[in-house]
Image (cartoon, rainbow, N blue to C red; front, side, top):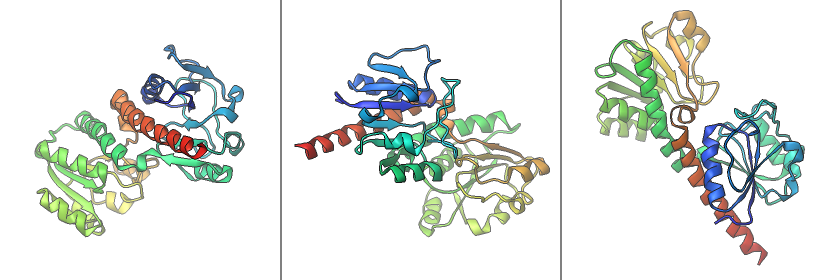
Length: 300
């Protein structure tokens, strides 16, 4: 139980509603910032503006999956007001206050470090990333069906990256009957791709391996699908970039060549917000409870 914990949930999308539901069930006191347009109410949760929030009493801050923008602005689909997180705001919280976010950026890392608070990036956890790969794969299949005039079965699919999402995407498209090639750098990944009866290739040989691709799925958050790579792809190729913004694709050149390239970060929150929210809620409740017990132990 989280009795006595005061938690500020600042901004977010439908996934945060599952987080709020779970934490209120565990008896935490929640303050919802950036939710004034939300019709639904939760027992134990109060809607507040950032300016009226008593930050000195907040034990935990939960930010949306993207964290903040490079200007500190927080995504708020349930509000028309700008919510901006600054170093001054973070510094007003107690020293033990922990900030949770899905991912982060230089701005957020910087203000948290200056304020000497702890930032937990949930998407760096293996359990969250693996669970999230399930709705990500389903969303990728949906996009592949919507944006092509051929079946996945029998098509040539190239997956870039063999991390937690890349592995799930590769395995699922193979199960649907696609001929899957996977690009990776680590020798152990190339060995595992072979063991899974897919075709491995080193990313240094990417240009040669996209000449006959029908669907290319990128999971690498680095400029990997460059103009020179796109120049080797057939014009009918569908490119789905699952990497976090700005993705790993030269979208300008893809458009120039007539290749349909779609940036699709955050698919879990789009195709299955309830499930994606429950994944976050379960992990957050566990982490916050552990944090609470550690603090209680130190104070005794």
